[in-house]
Amino acid sequence: MTSNDIILVPIGFTNQSLVALRQAVIVAKHTNSELFLVSVVEMPTALQKIFSDYEEKQKQFKDKLRENLVELSNKYCEGVSNVKCLVSSGKIYEEITDLAESVGASLIVMGTDGTPKDIKKKFIGSNANKVVRSAPCPVITIKGKSISESCDLIALPLDLNKETREKVTNAIQFARLFNSEIRAFSVSYTNDDEATKNKLNRTLSQVSEFITSKAVKCSTELIEISSSASFSGSIVKYTEDIYADLIMIMTKGEENLDLNFLGSNARKLINKSDIPVMSIRPAAKKDTSSFTIQ
Image 1: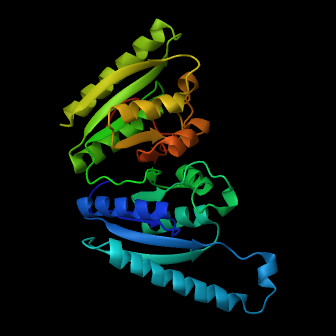
Image 2 (image 1 turned 135 degrees about the vertical axis):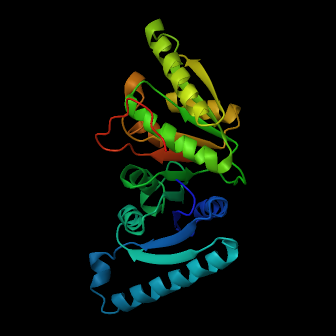
Image 3 (image 1 turned 120 degrees about the vertical axis):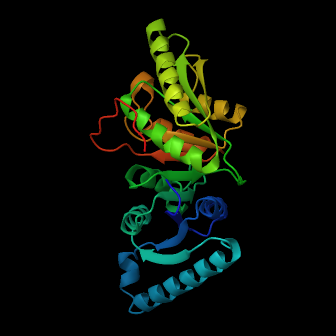
């Protein structure tokens, strides 16, 4: 993400989506970015379609949603250079990702209520996970109830897979915008062999050297957990202990050492963490054996 970008904010009119909006406004002001507020109307059921007035009611509902979005814009978005309100119809996560691509969004900021008790009744919940996997740009999911005016520390979990290094560039760009420090860290099980731990330490050293060469502060740490410990839970606890403001993860490729952010660990981390989580999809078939940044 750079300055003068477009930030897409899905609005479900839940308290959590409003928290996400307030956080997105802070990012937009800091980067002089545009905000696109979008609310999605799910397609009517076959039963609803048999009523002759459903199309008119659908139109009225969309008009009302658009009015509500404008009200939110007037209430929360003062100081943002440009705000647009969009109402769309379809599957929520598909519409969000399609809109992000069509408007050229550089970032999606959306709320999540954590693990949904009743998926069908949650605007975000399961949709957040689907957006994270399909969005053409990074996605920040917000479960916590508070917002932060700054981003002083970015937590960057790393493994041994080359694709994980792609997020280093994103972390540097974001750190430059907010004058942040980056904490790169890896998680090792206590029963891992020394060769694996040495590789992790070398990777952390290389990442730190690269980040500091770009005039961004960086510190590193290798943390060890017991073989019975929760991987995602350990990351959440560590990032809370260091008072991180943002956790940055990859959503594909990180499969070493039982770390698979595409699967359950990504969902658990997003659903557990009160610290905002930025999820980044790696470029397809991209060679990331060396670091490059403009």
